[in-house]
Amino acid sequence: MSHFSLHGRKALITGATRGIGRALALALAEDGAEVFCAGRDEAALDRLAQGLRATGHKAHTLRLDVSAPARIAEGFEILKSMTSTLDILVNNAGVEDVRPSLDVDEALWDKILDTNLKGAFFCAQNAARMMGKGAAILNLCSLTSEVGVPTAAPYGASKSGMLGITRALAAEWAPRGIRVNGIGPGYFRTAMTEVFYENEAWARAMLEKIPLARFGELEDLAGAAVFLCSPAAAYITGQVLYIDGGYLASI
Image (tube, rainbow, N blue to C red; front, side):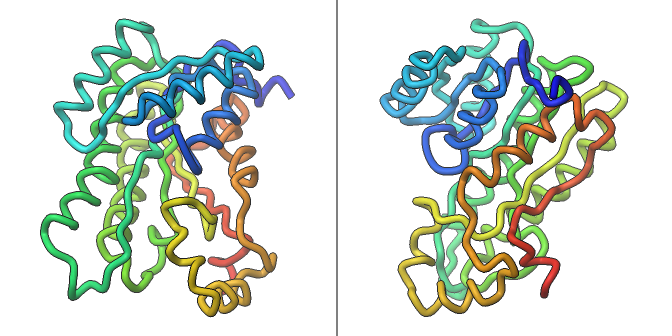
């Protein structure tokens, strides 16, 4: 199992305080990585890092707002004072606001695209400057990177863009020894997606479309994330692994 070990590697996880980000921070730490948990909620970051350290893991906190390139640069300057190198970036931070497309205004469009897409790109850019050969970037894509979802036009645009960024950076940074891949979660119940699951009719209809007949659990993402960040995936770049219970394969 040494091919899958992250011991000795330093990993930055954005949006680490809840949901998928928190689950991936825990997974990377449990596999041996020294984790830098990033986000805007300092109290939640402290609780996460303290919990990880209490169980013997190396964990740090980083106040990081990914909604603007200048704020990202400021956050990475602080990170550089904590570590001179970075081996893994998990680009997880994101926002969503379910709204009919006819009701989407410029402010909402900018909020979602600036955080989910522009923020991810500039986090990757800053991270790459700290990375050497063998480093890995993991982008959080989505089913909306591949299919259209009503009331999610800005979010889908951001995640389709994330797919494009993943492929472009993988091709460009391969000579630097930096791999860039993504995972595309299917239907997982988190604080950000709770609005969907409150609709019981929607939930029943969606379950009928998932071959494995259940919604995803956050633990279902851990193995794929660790794999793509580990030496076991040393010859894999520019790919997105969809973790969706067979949804895309069946439509």
